[in-house]
Length: 612
Image 1 (spheres, rainbow, N blue to C red):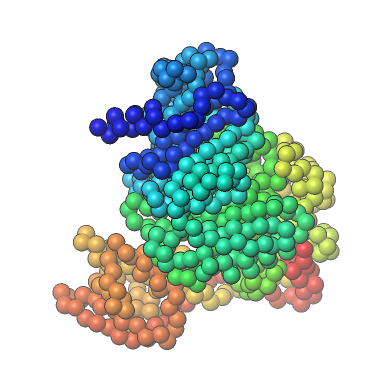
Image 2 (cartoon, rainbow, N blue to C red):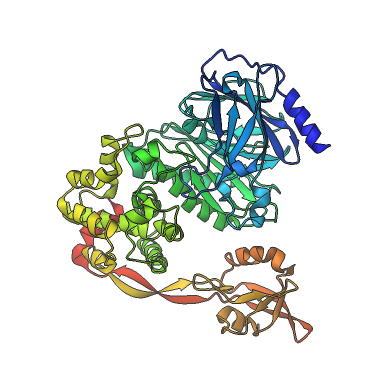
C-alpha cells in the first residue's frame, strides 16, 4: 500500500507544473507539505536533450567534506517520464547515478529523498551531520540541496529554478532570495548547479534574528527541538564575534549576506550525532547538541562558526581549479588543504587575540593543544601529498590533522612573514594579496601556488613551503616560537572530572547501562575529594539520574561546574546506595605550554598577535 501511495503521489503531485520549458533553467519542485515516512518527493524537469541516453547524478562528494558520502544512497523510487506520462527505461549505475534511455523524449524525473539523520547510528561511516539532511514533517527540514537535487550529465552549468512548497508554519532560512510572495511557496534561482549546492536551506518554525555588520546582512536561525535555546539567546555573542571577524578581515571580504543555520540535536538514536559545521560561500550549517550548557554552546559556536566564516577567504575566494570545477562524482582533490583548512583554522584563533576576545595565554594554550594533538599523526607525511590523496588510505585517516598541523603550518608561515618584513606583513596580508591576484572566479593551477606565494613574498617563504609543507621534514616549532620571544614551559590546564587529558575516561559503562568509576585508573581529585571509590556505580548527580542513555548530558553539565560549588552524587557501592555530599574540586592537569620570555622581541610579537 505504501509503495502504491508513493507512486500515485509521484504521478499526481506536480499539478500545474508544466512539462514544456519556457526558460533555460532546469526546473525542480520539492514538496515539503506531503511528507510520508520522512520522505520528500522531488520532481526535476530538464532542458530538452539531444542525446539518446543521459545520466542523472546525485553527488558522491561535496566541497568541504573531503569524504565520499554517496548522497544517492538516500534516493528511492527514481522514475523517468515522457510528456505523455509514459515511463522511460532507467538503469541504476551506482549509488549516485541513473542512466535514462530515450532521453530525447525525457519530460521529467521523480524520486523520493530519505533523510540521513535518522540513520546515523546505524552506519559505520555516517554522513557528517552538517552536510546531511533532516526530514521531520511540520517541524524541521534541513535541506542541504546536494542531498535533494542532482544534475544531468554535462548539464551542471545550466541555471536552476527550484520551487519549494511547504506548510505556512515553516520558514526557510537561507542566503538565497525567495522570488515568490506566497507564505507556502518559495522560488529560488541560481546560475548553475554548483551555486545551488552552495546554498542550504533550513525550514522550521521561525526563530531567527537579523543584524547588520558594516554592509553585510546576518541571519541567525535556530532549530531547538524542545525550545530550550532561542536565536535571541545566542545572538549577542554571535554578533560580537562576527563584528570582530569583519574588522579582522578588513577589505578582503565582499559578501553582502550571510546566514548561520543552527540545528540543535536531541542526540537521540534517530537524530544527528556528528557535531560541527560546514562552510558555504554565504552561509554555515551548524549541528550541535541541544543539551550543551549555554556558556559552552556560545564558546563552541564562536569557534566553529568563526572557522566556517573565514572560509570566505579560502577556498571560497582563493582556490585551485579542482575547487572551481569540482566534480561531484569523480572528484579530483587539490593539494592545498594546508591553506583551505589550516589557514582558516589559524584565522579562527588569531582573530580572537587580535580583537581582544582572548588573551595571549589563552591563544598560546590553544596552539599548545594543537601541537599535542598533531603529534598523534605521522609528522613526516608531506601535507600536499596527504591533501591530494585525502580520499584514500592512509591519507584519509590523517585528514583531521588539517585542523591541527594545518593551523600550525599557517602559524609558522605567519611568523616567517612577520620576521622577514620586520613585523609589517603577516599571513593575512598574504591572503589579501592572493585574493586580489585570483578571486572567486579565477582559480590557480595547483602546482603554481607555491611559486606565486614566493613571488608575492620572498625566497625564505618559498623554502618554508617546500621543506615543511611539500616535504617530509617535521616543523621545529620551538625555533619559530623563538623568533617571537616565546619559550616552552609547563602550564596548568583545567581538566574535566570524567575525562583524563584529552581522551582517556575515568568512567565506564557496564552491560546494564550503569556508569561506574573505573578500577584500573587512579581517581582524580574531583572523585577523591567527594569520596567516590573505584568500582562505585554512579546513579545520580545533583538529583538527576544518569546512565548510558544520557551520559553525554552528565559530561556536558560538568563543564559548567566551579570549584567550591555544593554537589551530591548517589552511588551504588557493594549493592547499597550511598549519597555523597561535598564541594566540587575541579581537576587541573600539568601540560606542555608556551609563554613569552624575551622582552627584546616584544614589538615583533605584538605585530604577530595584534597586527593586521
